[in-house]
Length: 387
Ligand code: SF4
Ligand code: SF4
Image 1 (cartoon, rainbow, N blue to C red):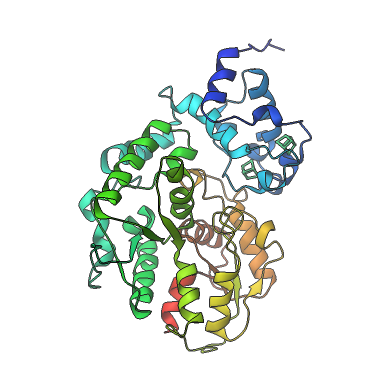
Image 2 (tube, protein in one colour):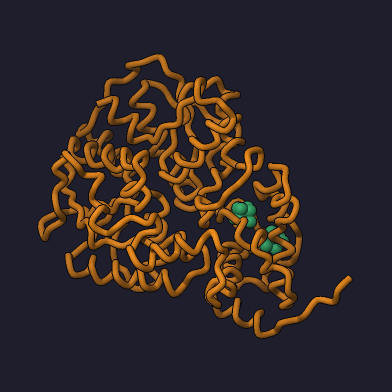
């Protein structure tokens, strides 16, 4: 067995990059045992051990930087939510990634993603001017001095044709509810949440700096996001940079509109059986569990079906932490677990409220050939159909 090198500079570097709680870890192993990688077979699942990664980081021993392991975490938060020592495990993972990405050595598959975010302000290789293509035919208002809310559309829903339906649905629902909202458009940049989780701190600072300057120049005070990832970043990463604003996921706004009678739906209009999947960044990270369920209950006249692992115990779709760009073999995808959970409830529709979840679970549904029995829908799409 080859002796391992001890790199004390590396240990100090990851502490500086945000792994401030690394030394709180007492190596109990609960994080590793709760991780969704324990639920799927395969080489990555066999190799990925977040307790061990943190131990290697604590003592500065090489090994945690192995690409397949270091970039496997989807930042779902299950481990962190349950850690008895309150270790900020995701910050630790992010800091370890920064030691590689910050040195100019991101994994090959991520280089086009990070490069596009640098040059185009979005990770999807789309030109800036096409950021507004989702608005075609909708007459979306521009954000101005008298507008109450700035609607920030996730890059995924600006450039991916499937995901654009989410942006279009949210905007139409807000319009129907009489909300004063507007968009800025092509000048916006990606919120940078995934880039930061991938360890590209310099890129995150560039994107966040551009957005902070732009939003301040337009007088943005209240933001509605289509994605829980953008909401989380604006509420946490950007607050640390001095942002002073209120941030809402669209489900919070729509739920209030329904409660105040400003928005209503045709309840129970079809016989579909709908179950709900809690996105990690809306639920565990964002604390929002009830708003989407309340909306589904109003829409269908009864509460949605529940998956066996729900709310705080929800299993990740695997789209967070930059994993949306990972190539994962069929049989090893977390999303497949959710499809089987949904099929077990007898649901015809699996609803969720995150563009990444829609993407990952649609892929999983297709790879399991369950698309004839289960449809994946974003909540906004169902609500729009129910107007
Ligand atoms: S659960 Fe917390 S204390 Fe236990 S090994 Fe994981 S990080 Fe360390
Ligand atoms: S955040 Fe989720 S994927 Fe990452 S180590 Fe923790 S449990 Fe595993």
